[in-house]
Image (cartoon, rainbow, N blue to C red; front, side, top):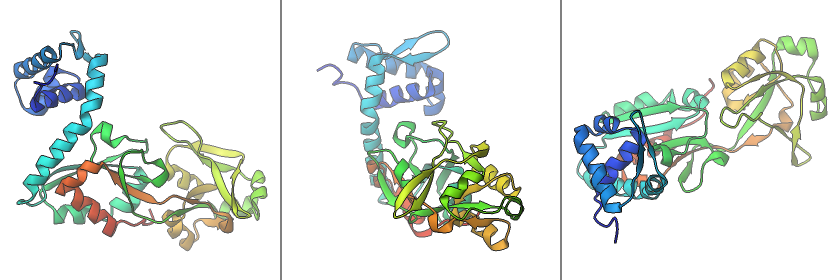
Length: 304
């Protein structure tokens, strides 16, 4: 059977070339000599009797066969890697790199207060935190853990709840209230201007949902400005530019201090809670399990 002689190391080298985009990049990543990387690729292509890369003087790109092989071996390679690591973990303290991706507000409100404690508890673990408000496919990108709202998590991963559903608050500054008043019903919002949020990945404007008569309604409002960062949204509301929207626990300190005034609170819509998610096979790695357990114990939303 063609390809039956392909070794684990050859597949790993192939994956590294694909991810790094070059022989030299793979050599640096794997700390091997470039000729050895090139020879391994030639042997794999010879066994499969098909080219895996289109080569030019400046770059390498996957052929259709290469794309097929990469897609259909990624999970298998990860499964074997995690299994081997799990055996090693039986007699060693948790160690190695753990990568995670989180939205900016999650870093600010959830991780920032607690990650130093994790680093002190597990000094042999190298924690890598990547902040991105874009939707990240952790399996495709080779990331161990993600934190997202429950409705935004891709299929095929394990998800554990970190927080209950979260109310999305509407609020204005005292200056805005003095000049424009405050709405008493959702219908009154037609007379006010919203600081709107635009999703970075899809470029869509975030719908504004409210609860009314035991159902969820979508509200259209005139816009004061459009932002793609929640900090700007809160800052603009503090300056009286328009009506702001954000997760209620994260602006609770502004409510208590009187810098912002909540409006239409009985109508606030709840968004799904935050979840930590990871691939099924990654649970075999103790370095990942201890971080997941730590988050399940410690994670909570703190005002930013």
